[in-house]
Length: 198
Image (cartoon, rainbow, N blue to C red; front, side, top):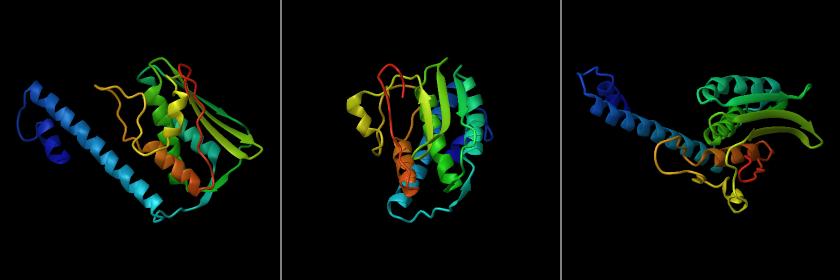
């Protein structure tokens, strides 16, 4: 569906008018959203069924955070958001699956980007604690009401989502991230204050 819509949209098979192009833009956006949903469902099913293999190696968290920060800078800049990196010196390496841990970072930063207003600020922190290593993604978005905070790690949960245009997710990113960190004997938590970010 996506390839054929793309052929028409890009006028490979003939000219189209602006109204047709706008309709095909919507079709292609929804094709991408459906592909994301299918991929997220497959990821979550693999994790929950125990069929996901963890390839544990030594992961340089400082490098992973630096790369994630660099990857998100252009995306944030397009809407006037700033993204800061606060990295403690001597952050130890951890034993984990680099690809999975990167997926968690991308999910958390993606949420922060989605819910931070234009001109807002996102902070990515890496620090040592008594229990181990702590990674934080903070934003100054709308925050999450106390009664909704327990729901954010459930499948298909989408809070603060209004009808109409704008970024849409699958409602699976945080559920996947939660399960990935469980597989790594880690944990994912939330601190949020309505009106003051998460």
